Length: 193
Figure (cartoon, rainbow, N blue to C red):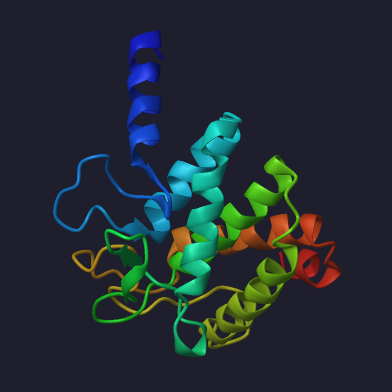
């Protein structure tokens, strides 16, 4: 990639970093000024893979704020809104059904952050959340054959009404399990992976 484009890409990420985490775009338009679970995870993983330490606070804020917005029964938010004072004002858990990919994006990001930043201060809450995420994922298998079945419109966009054994969700879960088995020293997660 040419140097000019790299510089522009990092500028977009830097401008998308807010005190509550990464928003979907550096432009304050429509609903993109929210903390989206998938978008913030992808931005965070880019930051961590390039070791852009100046942006680590936005990564951690994304992790913490998404976790604090988890709804009743462990439902992970699709996105979270914040008011001008930086306080959480609203959270969305999806359209017709909840988001099946959100918890895995969050878990992979949280585990990657702890690994790269060597910040294990959140290890306890991350481990507890992953235990709940995996319990829910196991229920989504429906047949105990190790692949999750996702209902229609449960992935990141309502406009794509796909359902079934969606590769993305199962790969995200596998990624989470492998990272969790290593970082949390869990034989159970290793075996499930």
